[in-house]
Amino acid sequence: MEKNSNISRRKFLGTGLAAAAVLTVVPRHVLGGAGFIAPSDQITLGFIGTGKQGRGLFHAFASRAKVIAGSDVDSRKLNKFKEEVEATAKKSGASANGLKLYKDFRKLLANKEIDAVVIATPDHWHAINVIEAAKAGKDIYCEKPYSHSIEEGRLMVKAVEKYKRINQTGNMQRSWKDFRIACQLVRNGHIGDIKEVKVCCGPPPKKCDLPAEPVPANLDWNMWVGPAEYREFNATLSPPLEVDIFPHWRNYKEYGNGMTADWGAHMFDIAQWGLGMDDSGPVEIYPPDYKEYKHLTFVYANGVRMTHEDFGRGYAVRFIGSKGMIDISRGFFDTLPANLKTHEFSASEIKLYETQDHYHNWLDCIKTRQQPISTAEIGHRTATVCFLTNIGYELQRPLKWNPEKEEFLNDDEANKLRSGYLRKPWSMKI
Image (cartoon, rainbow, N blue to C red; front, side, top):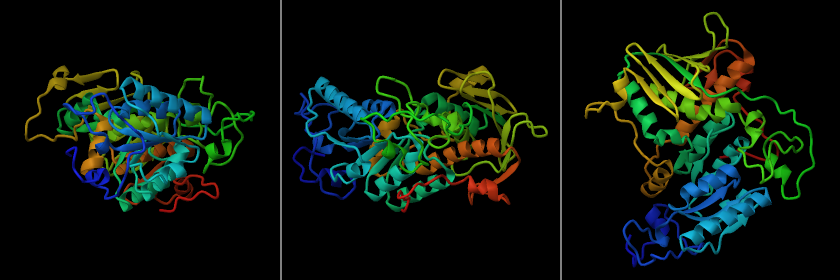
């Protein structure tokens, strides 16, 4: 887009909405240069959730888009976000004047200057955040696991589709070369017919039993709980700013889904990708120590078995085929035969979606209106496998699952576990 063009930024982005810049960004190289994106052409972002993960995502997007707003129910975390936005702008010779801060994310969504939102709230908030963002006409980057329950995830997908939003799920391992190559090797039959997949991603969640503690003055606890079942504050769920950790709310089923979903959203995601099951899932679930099943086991319609187990290599995925094996994680990529990892794919072989930058991929797709590498449907299907894992552990009996209808066969108790809790007056109306 030329500097003197009279085409509006939002028309350039394909949204058809008029806009004016809120955040003043005046880089030293304002007259242009190779790779420079004029401020009027930058996508404007608002961040919903400005804790540790939200601030980390800010730094991932800072050089690629224009961050003009943030919202959080913790005023200290929101102010920390402001400090980091201002400090980053200063280092690049820009200005963060005009940054808008909100306690209520709905006010952020009402800001017409925001093109897209980055959602980094606890899992129990994702569905409402995504649905309301879609209704507000914002494109969406939503952290993983995509949803907090199976039924919520399907509603989120419907909202994204209804309002024609570009949604990227934070399953960023899909944008890492080794994971893509591993899945391409599997999909092209280089280890033969897949017999088994092992996934290690940690334990399921537990019910929250933390004692009540005084609520800090800087935190709106009622808003933090939001649509979840109300319980009293405990700092384990929302630690103070000085405790620089990923909060442990993810270990409690009221707010997260345990490591089976927190890391499973990464590792089960790669298993699903390698198996070509992005629009489907398993059809049977067996609990540990049931007949020949030592570990919690999924069976797919094609007979492939996938187990949730610690196979001794940390959080990782192992594909076992009739002619070889692949182990893949963030720390290693091992193949049997060993030379498979350097295989040169021919033009006739399956090529999976390739991008080296999960964040830039989303921003590019906002402009082109093409689908990113980890869509709402993909995020939902991966999260569903995580939730099926937890349901299998909870019920401790064989289950049959219909991935097309997304329901259990002849099991009312299991089907009730597809939905989450929704506290009034919150709604998930699309």
